[in-house]
Length: 400
Image 1 (cartoon, rainbow, N blue to C red):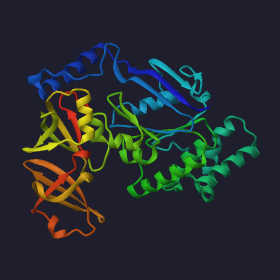
Image 2 (cartoon, rainbow, N blue to C red):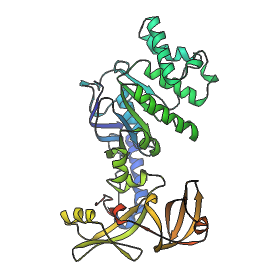
Image 3 (cartoon, helix red, strand yellow):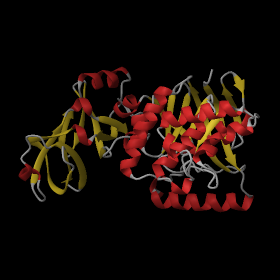
Image 4 (tube, rainbow, N blue to C red):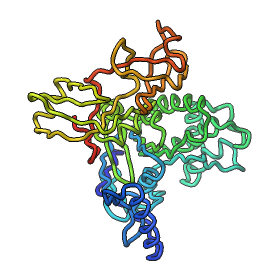
């Protein structure tokens, strides 16, 4: 049983009283400069105990599930991974690996393997010896070590480089060796900390496919950390979106993309990034809800109407999100000027100046008159009310 349970996990990095005072002053000054009229002070993540890197973290990872922790740099995802591995002490909360309380279990006794961002291969050892090292430490018989190493090498298609040193390998080969060293132990859980970040774009795509294939061959639980939302969407059974040490949303890639719980998740997940229309009033006319974007009243669809009516949503100021792939060219609608046109082959990415707002549209090039989308041209576009997201401008929560 290789499930993982994290209950109310918290991680605090202690700092001195002088550092706490200094950091709080800097953060408050920056916040007041950003929004002095509201007296806004954000969650500083600094307490009298120190800097809070992760807090109120609750998650159950099922046996053999592939879960991806994703978020911007500094959101606490790698710290969470390292707490599961035992490389970071848990300040508060409970960690269970299977049914075993694991807060105080040494890393070597957790039956967990970790793949690091920088591969961490022993430079003086061959690929074979790198992969066999942990088994030798565990005093596994020599013939069993050989069998396990060669099985893992075959799975990863690196049999032909077993006698080479790491310096003679490409980045992709080193990554395969690092993964091989992890799986050869047949661990309960494999943890991966941004393992593809040092690879070029083409190789990253290839290695994503390799990890998907590897996951199908290996019967274990994966926890994967990345700041790349494309990796998160393509690899994970479920995605855990993090910000400032808090979980923002947990769901399947499609759930997180189609139903983001707040403005941050909507903006972080999806490429190109979602378009936001700010200062949009949500109005109720004759019992029906409308949003007014650029002086155009848009009636929300029946599903959204039902949601808002059930909670008797008052009229408020909102932020409306529309994904670039949901924008379509139209004969009438919103009209702006094309400032940037990025040809991507099967589609073109248009940056449209709409009364000062930069709106990105992804338009398929099949049967498209390319002269229509050239720089400086006026263009009209529209989008279906069914596909928009409406966020409370103050709380940033998705209203529908």
